[in-house]
Image 1 (cartoon, one colour):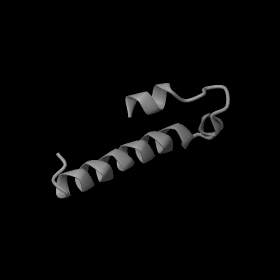
Image 2 (cartoon, helix red, strand yellow):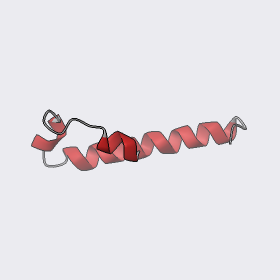
Image 3 (cartoon, rainbow, N blue to C red):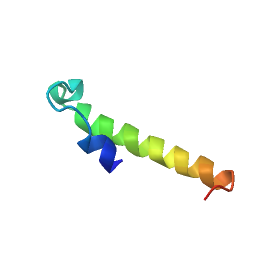
Image 4 (cartoon, rainbow, N blue to C red):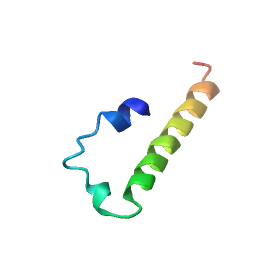
Length: 46
């Protein structure tokens, strides 16, 4: 998640032009991390 945020190209980020874009991008990344962790835990990979 940290690498995803700092690896973004800040000159061309469309979510910076919208009021809720940045929190929405953070929420989407956090949600993806949650579902990946849950899936890996369920399959016994963690």
